[in-house]
Length: 349
Ligand code: SF4
Image (cartoon, rainbow, N blue to C red; front, side):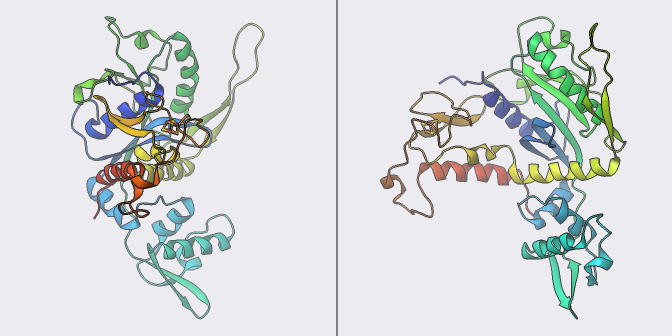
């Protein structure tokens, strides 16, 4: 069956697969961690590429495959080399110490710091320094069919990304056309955003081309968070509302995003689908391997492949007999296959 990458979901998987294998678009690069649908409370990027320091990425593996949230990061980044009372060792968090104490216990339970009680006081000691593994964060917005109206919707989001400068670069990925000048270049999107044109249904380095280079943003400088902007026009003279995003917030947020990307990768979509359905299959299309529904005879999306799907049927028990319930049936095998792919791109020590 010819690859169906007409949907945003399929397009997004194709972009993720390509980025994992070939990032950056022009030239040699180090290891990357690629994830989907990550960002802040206000803004979710379609594809996130974390460019990593190779040695530090390997060292990160000692902290386990689960993401470290901001509380755990506070602990592991500041844990001392020698035993110390946690209130002496860690900087004042700006919120009650009891939350820090809970985070110390969580970190110790996960085996990423050492903890002991000394005269009623909780002491901690680091096992390993937390490595500086994130070099750059790249955000990609996937719009396979970027017509004028899609560009009008996308432009304000990109302007917000550029003003905030949380990522180091912002790109738009769109389908390649036969036009002499790619139509996306004629649309009114910010010049700071790069453009990737994607040949649908194909994989390999040359399947994606950078047709416009982005301007590097500065995540180490304060950013501007645009909260509201006037629509403009004759009857709208309201003021733009914004607030400043300070550098400490940006640094923390970037690391949280990177940590979540590290845990999830881009194959985690299967966690919210129904691989335990008897119709769930996996199709190796030319562009990217992706789920296929044998009942609907199409590449299903995450949204439709859910518990509410009217065609859902559980795997027959006979499929699960070998090794059941530990190994499970074909659905579990697909999950294991995707997990192995995720693990390959998360080097261990
Ligand atoms: S029938 Fe529904 S739940 Fe089963 S694989 Fe197809 S879309 Fe998913």
